[in-house]
Image (cartoon, rainbow, N blue to C red):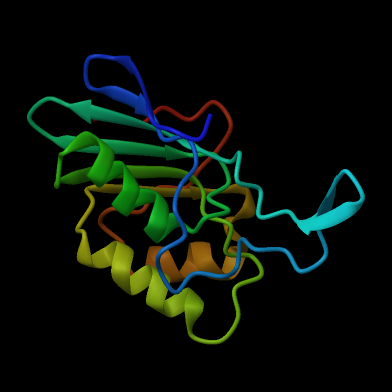
Length: 151
C-alpha cells in the first residue's frame, strides 16, 4: 500500500516512504520494471517498515530493507505516528553500497536522534555496522537470527 496503515493502537506499517533526504544507497541504477511498453526505474517503493510506539519509551522502527533510506524511514515513522522520541531502530539499513559521505552522514543523523537501541542487520553492510558500533557503542547491538532485544 502507498499509505500508512494502523495495525493496532500505537502500531503502524509505513507503506511507501517518501524519499526526502540526501540518501541514495537504496536506489538501484540497474533495476527496472515494465509498465506496458515502457521500462521504469524500480526504486522498490513497496519496501516499508513497522512502527511501534512503546509506552513510556518511544518508537521502535523495524525496517525491512530501507530502500528509501533509514533516515527517511525513521523521519516518516515519526511523522505518521506523531511521536518524536525514537527508542530503537532495527533491521536492514541498505548502506552496503553507500558512497562518499553518505554513510557517515547517515550515522550522524541517526546518532542525533539518540536511540537507546540500534540493531543494523543484513543489507546494512559491514562498514556501516562498524560505523554505528563505533559512534553509538552504548546503543549498538549485533543483529542475529533468534536474537532477543529487551525494551
